[in-house]
Image (cartoon, rainbow, N blue to C red; front, side, top):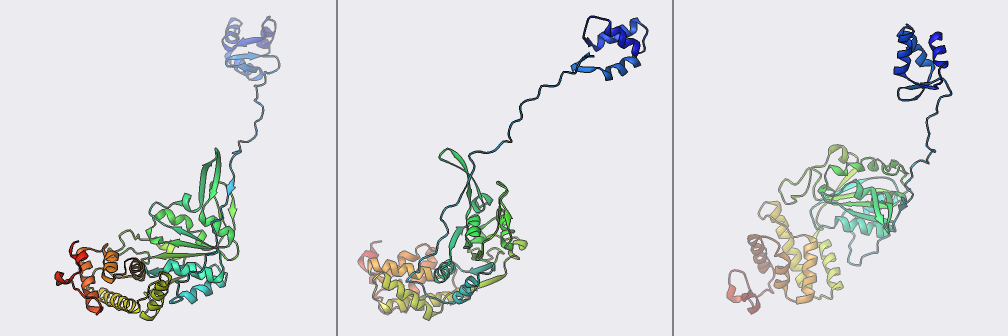
Length: 369
């Protein structure tokens, strides 16, 4: 190997190709093994080229600072607020229990289940109004995903901004998070499992860790208990994962208000809309309760909710016509159900001077329809 090294240094060249070194070794009967040993000592200046001089250091680019999203920031809107007290609200049912839970400031996630229109969401809002607790409401649909709940990047005024979702805002503010119609969700909502444990969560898109503030709590509402709707009335109600449901401490069953409670609710609505007809309100309450009992016995396919009764009172304030107000507000039902409901009301309200069985008794504007 030393002989080969000396032969190369005696030439005028400073850089050799590997092929040239092998040719010199062959001319001088030097084994190729010495060639490979020598190549390991020489400096590889480029592909297939070697030199005895100082190695050519590879060109290194100036170290660039780590890539940083210069225009990424986090924004928080004032979406958490203390609701105003509603003068038509009546404290009934589970209101006092809900107030105790909110006043405790304890993390105590609860699920409120009940039929549509019986005041579940309204009760949560007004319990927050009474306790002066910040509140934020999230409406769930099958399209709701982690980006909607936790947050995601948005392009605002030409800048990429991470917009915190309602869940993160509620956690930071120590607010009540109302997840409305949670049984309309898909498995995308499983991103909230950590939130439902009351522990800090990490925003995957920014690496920020969010620690729940004191007073933060989650209240969910649904028309089912997370098992879907067996009778098909709530076709969008989904089956919710058991592991998700297990994170709720308690479930509250919300029934319809009693006739006395419903009378208070409708009278307050009547006052709000300047309706002075207590007989009409009493007839509506009796009518709705008969329908509900019939529904429980599978006698009819639909039911009249408290919300629907409030709609009728509001409509009556415009038209001042009992049957017209009822008919307009129950037209959403199928024809057979609608006619059965109207027929029942005509038998309950003695002040109604026409019936479905005898069209000749209908007012002229009704006959012309």
